[in-house]
Amino acid sequence: MATLTKPLKELVQELPSHLEDEVRDFVEFLLSKETSSKQTTQPLRQDWAEKITIAEYASVELQHLANRWRAG
Image (cartoon, rainbow, N blue to C red; front, side):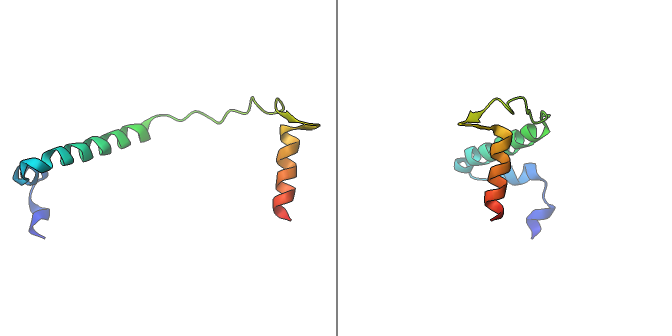
């Protein structure tokens, strides 16, 4: 576990050159994941409700029916 005490920069410098691209890809992935998690989320829109109809049922009625069917 001696590697835990070494700074990350030193560890990366010790890597063989053929692994540098792999490390770069992984670091870029981590950075993009961090950036995307910081993006603000928009509230769920409900403006589509009551606009969808199947036969004689509106979307809210279909939701209620589906809940009843799931309950048994």
